[in-house]
Image (cartoon, rainbow over all chains, first blue to last red; front, top):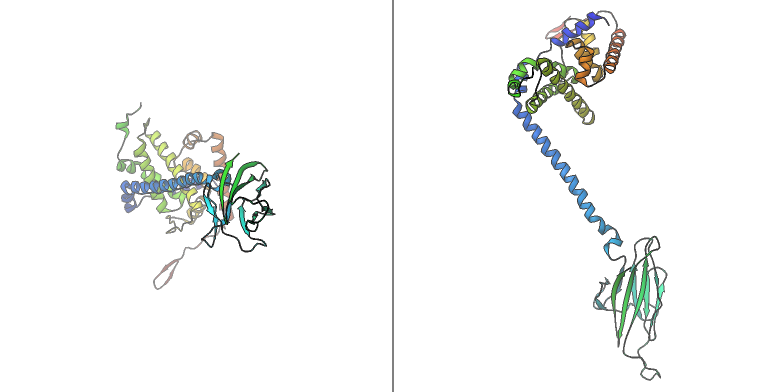
Length: 198
Length: 177
């Protein structure tokens, strides 16, 4: 490449000129300004939508973590007058329905624990009834036969007892205590659930 | 002598009449597309109108416009890299000889950073120190780019055959050479 070549480049490039119709279009800046404005609006809307999504997900995050929810576990039982299992609500007494699949008559409470959570319980009894914990998350309340009127030691018709279940999180830390307040009133049996955070 | 902003602010038409061709051909060479080149020239004029900058003299104004134009061309190239597009037409530059065509094809095929220094140095006549101010580079970087640009051009033009190439125009009724 020599100086002649570069002067040829200069000559060739300087011959390039703006066509008349292009010149008229270029000088009309209003259209271009409008285009830039629309670009700005579209970009702003996209950014605002992304920010809104992030903010919403931050606020929703507490509901994802069961610990933040306030209740680490749920307890289900069969209620009188319904066919399905119901989730026990705190401080609400429900009339229990006997569960037919047991060896002896009684009631089942199902614990719904988050993954890797565990529980430990304190033993309990109520009159001649028996409470057992099956490996997994089922609690069985085996009720005894009707109060034998001729028995030497007659049990009262109305009795209450409670099961304390301590919930341990995935790190093994005790985070919550469930209490199932069981009430025996003649032939009817009730349960009330309460929670207590540690 | 520094002009006041009011004296210095020319209208769009005045600026275009004085610098429009310069900005247009720069954009054409870098972008290789007339539609994009027109858009970039418009954007350069918009920047001038919006910024209302104080200029020392006409040369200062010209250098500022060139810098804005080159930066906008680079932005456009970067945008095109990430957004697929189909050019509407092939760029056509009138050549008088085949040698011109060969050299210009070589220039058009250079990477954009080499095209910029070739345009500023050989077409606009800026010296290395002036180019370094316009492009915000060190003088050694500008010299290096010029050297590499010349090497690439020499490489591309020496690879082509030196024999004459007959240009063929197709007209109604047959071929004309």
